[in-house]
Length: 262
Image (cartoon, rainbow, N blue to C red; front, side, top):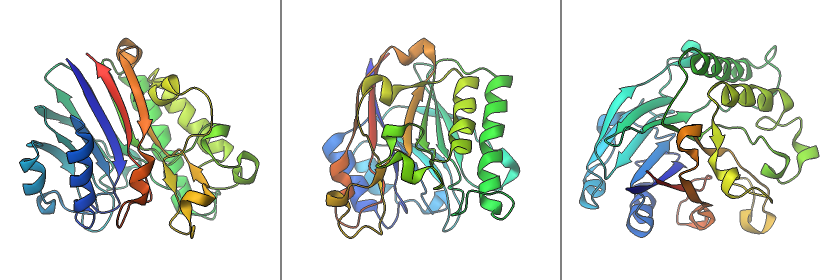
């Protein structure tokens, strides 16, 4: 049975409930992974989601910050929630579908503004988080798994609007890209989005600071869909729903989709 999955940093699920409902009604993914929910789990507004058929949810939350959740039309069982780098943050949840596929939903730390761990504690936390992801994948090799989320790194030159200008900007620095690559390699994860869309500029985030984000188009691909090699070949139809960045009271991220024939 094929299923479609979407990942979206929503930047407050309660504030942006209307556009989550819009996405679910218009695009109807079977599974929606949300990051930066900024809500305790028991405060997430479920009634509207249930009315659209999304009767299953797992997640981790905290008041005002971070938070990850998986909404699903398909039964899903929680199978883990890691606290890499011991930050005490709600940044990971894992669930297993009835077909045996495990979905990992991550919100990797953004890393602050200065790419130097000696003067910016948040940057060090980001690198440590990615290192512990790497070590976890080495220790317990994932199988039949999908990893999605706001990984807060645009790894490729064509994942940013200007590679040279962003080399010293957090999210595209060489050390971050290398840490992400090590975590990806440790789990043998396949970048499903770029397997489907191998060439050309591709973004999922546009800053709120841009007066006209669409015209300026100074984006970055911070949101990712990966899969283990045993199921990555079943993935297709990857896309970024760019239009969602222009919806009423939008997140600064756009949803990323992929379909799996499993």
